[in-house]
Image (tube, rainbow, N blue to C red; front, side, top):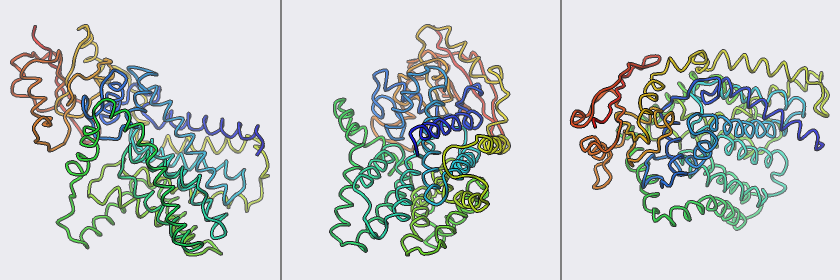
Length: 502
């Protein structure tokens, strides 16, 4: 591909990502506000980083520090909106489409690969698991797609003649290290990735070569930890990093909820989860299933080349859901495998023989494909119904105006995760437990409920945003100034805004 064509393709992918996410993500500027509590929590912690707060020690949430750094960059772009998050989503989305294109290109012509790759991305962002946009899973997706591309390229072009290159082992390890420092439940994918590569190298070369490959991968995986070691080490917060990210997620949050079921019960539970994931996210699971069959039954393949995709899928699925917890957006990483399914569409286009395979060619057909994808997103995305809302439909804007009447106001969010008022008011949380999380922690110095209760009891902040359950001591220092019943779908909550009585 010429330099001009490469630039054209990259621009095409960026524009495609921009348009698709404009509709599908509530972080985009066609939506008033992304009031998903998770992403507002990430935004608050990221904001804290660039205002001198150290995650886990000074401001607590239990995801990986790279996620908060990304949201911190978004905060630098726009302090009180999700414009920065949207632009980062667009960049990561373009990487997704480029990775999907490279996967499809291993099997089909350039033209058909360009035509179907955006539709694979459309099936992802139109799904229920995409949720409201800006999830940790969404920001991890390019690393899964490009990791999958490395294996597809290896088994289609090099195996068993040559081992996978050291550069790709190193890059795959770096991807795994980034995943480990965003949301480590997705590491099942890269565990299986290295396992498949290890067996491929042992079969084609010897055991020692397989061990050396593992060493390159592990070295790459260590690299993303270095900034964290330096940052938390300089700030004297290495233990806080371990406690807040590893200990809390492994020993507090991620307790097995199916341990009483026994082996057969767990298998049944996992199969039931998979069934409902397919039903809820049929948009991309159609392509996942199609792709698994295509890779497995492709002619002239050796055993490892047939089973690598199902093995990667299985280990990723187990890593995410083995603990028994399930939320709609957990399954989004699985959508990376939809890239294998659209290969069948691309090959069908090639068989029809209607389109030349060189150059970027006529833009008419790509435009038609983009329009079909846009319509598909508009019909299927759960977020489109929120597009027509204004700031008057969100009580948070009214609460914001009331809070901003106080200069340099301080705030505490009680009874739920970050509702978004910190974001709209551009307030850096002052309390480590700035939001109420579902964490059963009862340790000296690490009890979120006791600390929030103390802040209310002693009147340490100017405003308290409460959802549903009002603290018993709230009347000691605070007066109710506003309230709202707010919800969507089957959810409905009572929000109360209290102001400190001077």
